[in-house]
Image 1 (tube, rainbow, N blue to C red):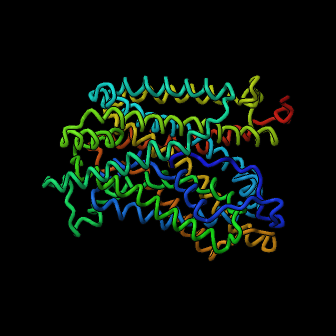
Image 2 (cartoon, rainbow, N blue to C red):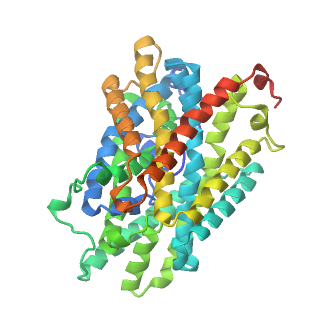
Length: 479
């Protein structure tokens, strides 16, 4: 997951498909839009730990999670306006709808520290590479970047979302292609790959559940498809074109994910790899091999710029969706529903920022920056997966309870797709509670307490309390 697509502002799938109310796009354009909102270099170091087996670990979740999510959410978006809240409210009930939209927002609370942890480690290579392993440096960068983002967003600055499209080229395609080309040249010079590249290494070694835990991170990497599904109504023949767009997007996303991960595994030994600074470690090492280390800071600036652009677009999106639903139904207290003079939900952003600041400080106290990064990534994924579980259940129930409801697109074998997606999401959520084998002999109890407290507390307990404590007056907050 890189940056979100634009929020659904209405759906045309259930309306007459005429040139008057639809501006058509090609299926290739939709594939590229989807690729830009999903693909990123940020998870590459995580999978580079597995070397050649990273191919298997990327393809499996693409088949059992990415594809079902894309096709199922396309049917929902083409039949019901209002995004995930409307889908789950109609398919299950309104409390479940609130839980779904809450999880879509709440995952960002832990997403920002993990995203900005990557920014801090990348920025360290521009200033001083030794800072990449400093928890204090990471905490400071997270806090400064987040609060600067809040200040920018609170002023209602227009055009922020435009940073997303530029980010795909500047922070993903160019660095990714360069990393792969240099990696091939590195091997071409006779250097031995740091990771074995034989057929025996195509499947990850099995050492219990802990050996596969890092695959959970790929579910977060692939998430966000439900936001892109709203564009299904802009295709001339969605039944034929949307699957083609999704298969093309899936192929492009896999290339962007897999090839840089392999390049990193060729250059940096797994035992030396940082989950936050791995991309820059690889660039630094390969530039050193070609006497071009002066390029390392330039690549660092490109990656940082793209990540910060993505953060700004995320700040504006999920919190606004939560605000709109809460104003309609009175789910949040008045303080969190108020807008500033620019019409921005500043109180939500500031409250979220206080929590993000506390989380950022954990980087200063957890000895291993990679461990902190992993923990926050797992919590982010688990909270988001709760929303996907609800979406798959709602899709099946809507197909059965409203079979004649007009839809611009009908997913093939919907029940089977939902079953596969639900099972994969649930498995990923549960596996996230297992400490990964790569993290040595840390306390299992502490790991479980932090992950369970973050995922279940934020994903289930907090929305439950908001729902139970709500008052009729919460619907009457002035604009």
